[in-house]
Image (tube, rainbow, N blue to C red; front, side):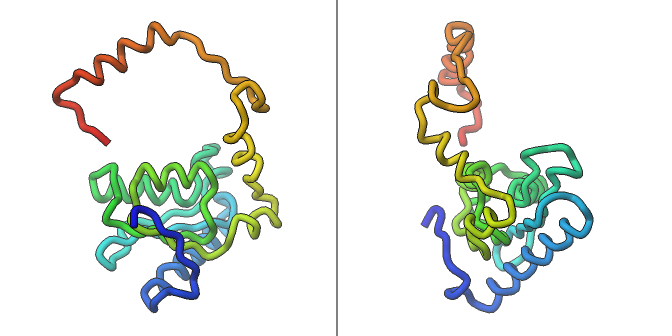
Length: 168
């Protein structure tokens, strides 16, 4: 039950309302030249707690996707970094980055309207990222080289021994 994608065919009236709001946000963001046509709504206990739309180009932030923007807004509003009692409604199937953020936030459910193949048809094709993840580090298009491990390791060891840490 940690994360479940459900098609719009199995939604109730409230789910329809929330997905429509996500779609409306996608249009608002697009009309405001904030970024691509993507919107997201976060709901807890039947109430919208946060919204967001894509702001990549207006903020010069490649991480300002609708889902990430909504997650940031929800965490600020709810004063928490985990949204395990929340549901995310998004206008399109999340990209790999947003999928990672969704798992880190620990949503209990995700509803989406369009699929990644729909996004690809208008120039938002993230398949290359999925392909890169599956490659060996040495075969990736952007070179990855490990340096400074011995200097960084003590920080991890200190974290492991820290008694007043907040686990997540």
